[in-house]
Amino acid sequence: MVAFIIRRLLGLVVVLFTITVVVFVLFFATPGVDPSSRLAGRNPSPETVAAVKHEFGLDRPLPVRYALMMKRLFISRDLVSYGNQALEVVPAILSAAPVTFSLVIGAAVLWVIGAIAMGILAVTFKGSFVDPLLMILALIGISMPVFWLGEVLNLITQDRLHDTFFFRWVPPLGYVPFTQDPWQWFLHLIIPWITLSILYIGFYARVLRANMLDIQNEDYVRTAKAKGLPPQQVLVRHVLRNSMITFVSLFGLDLGVLIGGGALLTEVVFNLPGVGRLTYNALTALDLPVIMATVIYGAFFISILSAVVDILYARLDPRIRPT
Amino acid sequence: MGGLILFLVIVVISFLAPFYSSHIANTDPFVSNISGTTVVDGKTVDVVQQGGGGLGLGETPIGPTWHSNYFLGADNQGRDVAARVLYGGRASLLIGVGSALICCLLALAFALLAGFFRGWLDTIVSRVMDLIWAFPVYLLAITIATVLLTTPGGVKLWFIHIQATSLWIPTLIIALIYVPYVYRPVRGQVLATREKEYVEASISQGASSLRLMFGEILPNVVSTVIVMFPLMIATTVLTEAALSFLSIGVQPPNASWGTIIQDGQGLLYSRPWVAIAPGIMIVLTVLSLNVFGDGVRDALDPRAKVRVRE
Image: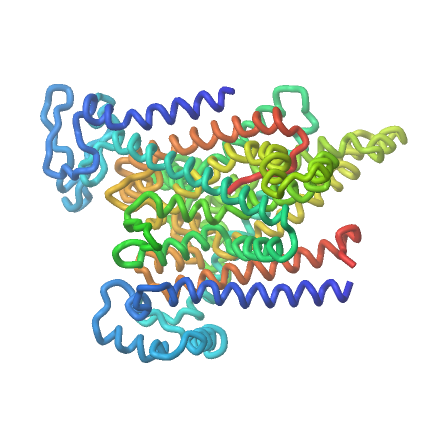
């Protein structure tokens, strides 16, 4: 087990290193482009270009430039964006991370509860109209572009039905930090949580239903039924529990993707100042230092989380622990 | 089957876009028409009304007329939204189907090579796939798109020259980022098929590597790719919409469903149809493909565990 963990962590280090190299080379070593003009943002002045050239050591060989960039990103953390009024990149990401975190965690709670409820209902009522109805709803859920769904919900709750009883409580778009006012934090995030979770409720409900139907045919389920256990107990203790193996590993990876920047579209539509919107603002200004940093941040988060999932998984299930 | 029919209907009406705009709506949806007028119920109206905003500022385009001209209204440049949605559908579907096709072919080729020859070739290809996989799909697409869009004068690669506004750029980006999704299960199948008795029989008859790959292994793994194909199109259509919404997908003067939703964002509360209509088209397209894809999977491969999604 210890050997497995060490190997997995070494693999992680290699992946993280390769990610930084790939991103760096893509941004700053593509042939035929002067990297200083890219770094300086849209329509830079000649002075800015000269300052950029000097700061990033662009007259020096590529490996030195890579080392300089990584030093400024991870060690001195003073990488500055030129497109955006000398915004310091690393502190900007660190202060945006809690917003993304709030959004993703709340949505995750909703989608786990929603998906388990839908999965159990669909399996319990298999053969009646409830099961196909739920599965069509799930399919519609995974077919909607999340940013469009967000806009439609905005239209309903902010404009068309805002003055009715149902949506009068919906605050204007934006974010209130939890430390400042927990209740407002909660109110501001309800609609974004729902928007983000719908896709995942649909997807996880489908996976869970398929898994539960598979497991219902296992020998141990038949044994449990033969023992005379009540059907509800068989469903929850034997079928659901074993179906959760796939669910949990998918959940870990999706959580990593979302915190790593996958919630970008939801943040943009609801004007939440998280890492995703930081990336979006940088995109509209073609602000490369920020884009590079957020991409590396996202890829790091996913790689680290997937290593953690692998290790936890090996701990839980000895069958997949390689020797 | 219903899914396939709905998808084909959407494809056909999208490809009738030029006919619609020139014979029914009588406009060019790519030319701005801010000072133009149109006739509604016998009255002449400005396409874009000035000073519609709260302080007499801003401008409000005409809303849905539900008639042949400006059926869904205009966007803030006075362009016919209904015609743009049809043209946008053409771009979205071309990119979606094209990138799914390129993605599946690339994945199939790599999986055949890696799974058949194994050894160092397999190691290299699989490591590269793992690396692509380590990036969140949207962030990888953002990275490549920013690089390509900031390359002045378009992309020049040997003899190929792609303009920065070409639809090929989003197509290739989306194809590339999803290759590992298809590659992994297919490579596993190639590895398993390679050990089957009929392949050994063919080897003992002195078949060449090429003959083994294309005559024995390919026909047995191709059904996996066919099962994934409709679901891949659903995924690529959604990705294209997201990238275009973020302004790094389809570039003007082209339009796609994603860019029209972005155009409609600023008009959301005054003229919601600009954003809603292309979204409905996306939902219908993706839903039809998902239903069709489920059907194909149940028909060809009832025990498949492979699922693709956003």
